[in-house]
Image (cartoon, rainbow, N blue to C red):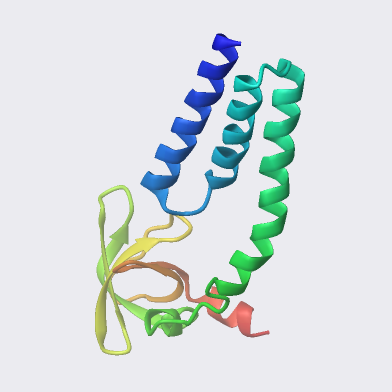
Length: 151
């Protein structure tokens, strides 16, 4: 009984610590299941019952609270100004070369750090298509890709 109690206490403490660190409601259900298993261990119930209680309480709480949590989560991701640049044509102002860690493009009058989306090298003055924006970096590919996307 003591070994089982220590095991479930460690699971409980670990789950609570993990929840406190992440604040994402990831392990709170397991903490409740571990608490049920600790109580079962204190009462001297067999390990099989403890495991079933841990699993059942964790699963039940997970199933009951997930729909409630989803109701309060942000549903729509609002696009940023940078998202509006995706698919636009940019002009290379500094050669884009991933191996040399170089590259800048001008998109609508604004200069961006640039990396090649497909690994190709693009010389200064060439038109490229913005594939994605990550932070302050525009990932670009051949300008023909912009025309292919439109069709």
